[in-house]
Length: 91
Image: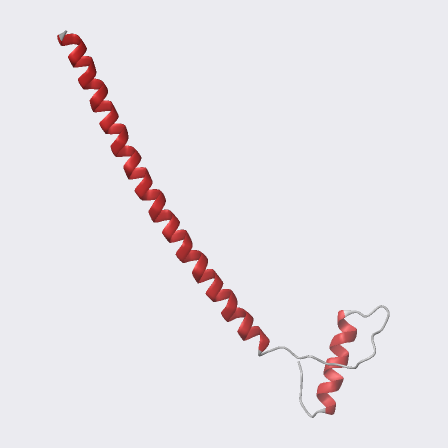
């Protein structure tokens, strides 16, 4: 009978130990989820700020006929010529 009680006590101790570990892991997961949420929110704020700042440096030219095989150089030349006509130097 004493051996069974000893065995039961060991089982109870193991269960308590595992329960404590489980609670600790749940707390860590909760903290990581909060941290992840904070990081996600910060990333969203930075993306919005970046988007706002890039809008201030955009130039949009309208009503310019599109060429069939335009290259980046062609578009840059159009922009530079337009800047020259407007009296502004574009680099």
